[in-house]
Image: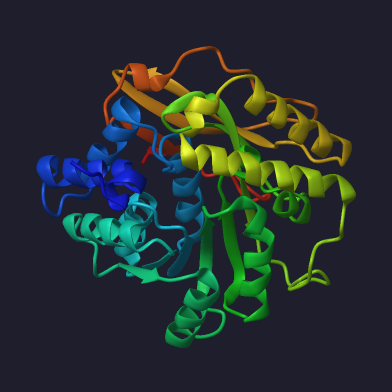
Length: 341
């Protein structure tokens, strides 16, 4: 039999949908997440912000309490439903933008299965067009949190677009994923004074990555291009090459010398520019669950090296928790209590 182009390009995403439909409980968002996580942990690498990355997102949402979140890159709807589960408690909304119609359809099914269609809207189309739809519906200064999970070398341009159309609320927060691997050098350079977090890729612990958390500041650089730095141009080209390789295979298949050498070069260039990670995520196995926690780095401290253990070897989907609280991103008062998210 002939294999269709749909099956060729979306076999991973289709298998996730099949698993969710078969095994998840309708209107039980936690069971939907567990099914998606289990595919990523046990079957095939998925580009989802689970595990340590989810810990970062959960902490930011708990502090920010956003009323409207804008997501670049829906994929299968994992992160949009995680965020929706939290903001629904204060009647918040999530708008997630996706170019790929197959991914958008799969995500809509997952959102419906999770019982969160009243919270999440999947806006199909290129982000340049989709943000205009969001602006028309919600108005200026309406978005108070952005999650960027698209092509990293476009982060700075997409953020500048949001600034230019005045859709970001005062004190809006922007989380960017995959800023080390495959990389977002222009974005890191532009927001270099704000938290840079070292962590591990979900479903592939040997792969180190970074996330950034930055708050909007309407200063002189607002809505403008970052200052051109020659060293960033080659890093950006290499970032795009690695992204194409990861899309063709999977990030964990790139583990080894090429990816490690690129990450080393990326890190060294930013150290030369005075940019270092300021936090990392630590994960421990406690009573059969992986528990992740944000840890502040002191002056001159570096994140610990990977110890060779991969939580996915010991747990199933739904068994990864994040500690929310006990950390500050920009000089906020430390919370007195911690809770498991």
